[in-house]
Image (cartoon, rainbow, N blue to C red; front, side):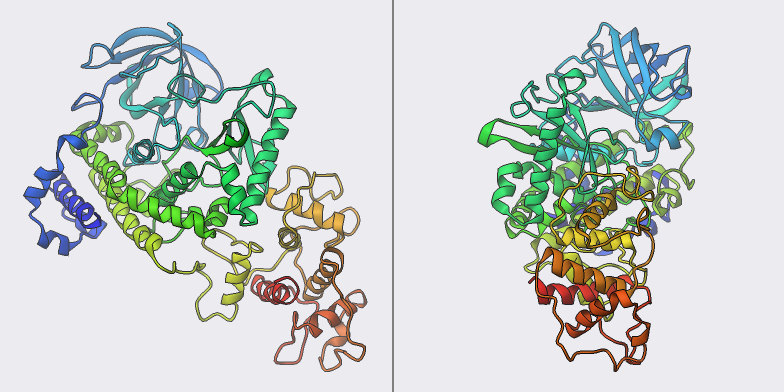
Length: 639
């Protein structure tokens, strides 16, 4: 199947070069010469343009036109401001077309709304009539979405994700969509993707709300931007349904408890509990999709879930899928880039990281991946090829209104976004990226012994390599980004509190106004940990301040380990009577309050001296040193 997919890609790239006369395109996407030599491209092209790969909508060579007329231009209003307008659809299909229908308009989205003022996403709400069938939709609805794809120069990344999710068939509602040319007050704006709103309605979401929290079903979103409901392990959740007066404090508490139980089951590696709380097929498919496209929003936003079912059949289902502009090589930041190798979702989100550590889940992922590679993934890629080859002129017209090809702009721009200066080149890059990514994942998922995870800044020869892998595998220390550990950076007090909190099983704690430098709106990742560390006396402040970003010295870390062993593990912390530190040249620099802890830490070989026979008690502890000390601590006192 991989060879067939690569053959298809080569065929399309030949078409791209003929279409655009861009001789440098082959260099941009690194064509596979071996595949060229082995296949008859003409026969392959004829073979690949079959009816089975055509879209379900009637064939067209251009998109419908959507015309909005309004006294108030929607791009120039506050995002949440609803205002009236008239909507006209022009299409070759008579049952799709209408003229001057009353609607209400408002902005939507986050990054695109704020960073792309010339091509913003919109919401449309029908007023008269209050519901309409749109572009052959099975059900009439009132609310619809116009996705701008301002940062996706292929305009096709979300379409790929929607297509694959629909074929997977495990995540319930997948938004239907239609590409359109959008005009506002007779000015052409560009190509948009008109799609379903994410709400509860026939053909969309199916959760049923109830006054009893244990009976009601729920639609929730993991969203770091919305902090209205609850947080579990530093991640914020928004409850979409029930909503309004139907959503009570009891409902919120129920959902928080349900998500907390899932998190604990995953953290503890308890497969029986995981399967009693999660709908495993939808989680497997969602993980595969997110891993395939390397979605930058994993564990940040646009991660939708539903709690459905009653009694012993109640589970959390993943979906619907949403928001894929910044995926598939179209993003470059300190944590993610356009590379096709490496695990992303399985590192960025602790759910997936914990699940993939379970042999049962990994086996299901491998089996499902192999199924999808036989049919669904190739068909989703074939759909992109079909749309590109049949609607090239329609897509390319977008860049007459939006001259962004070859321009470095927008959120986390990757080099391909601004270095490839043609629309055909953008699509060729996307298809090549998918080809390379599926090949890498195919080897990864089917490996007898998956390659160990490595951070890019932790070389194989580094003295701390094993320790870094150890603390990462035991969920004590994460990276400074999903791909960097920053071994030379200093361990801070917030980091130390978080490490010991994780070691204790991540107990939930409510924020209290204890420290003036740890307000309720402080960084999510350490608030709960600091509350726990203060309550247990493992890591203490100086009265009114915690100093979360202050460095941890070696003697301070020894003291925290000493306290954790005594207070949390309730283990013996005695020191041999005649043991001392006299052979260290700087033993007189140990603070009096840390003397016993340093004795204990050195006797147990947790904190060792340097080749110069120095303990360096007042020196800041690097993250690499902390990893090594923690590995020794766990091996002696816990494992």
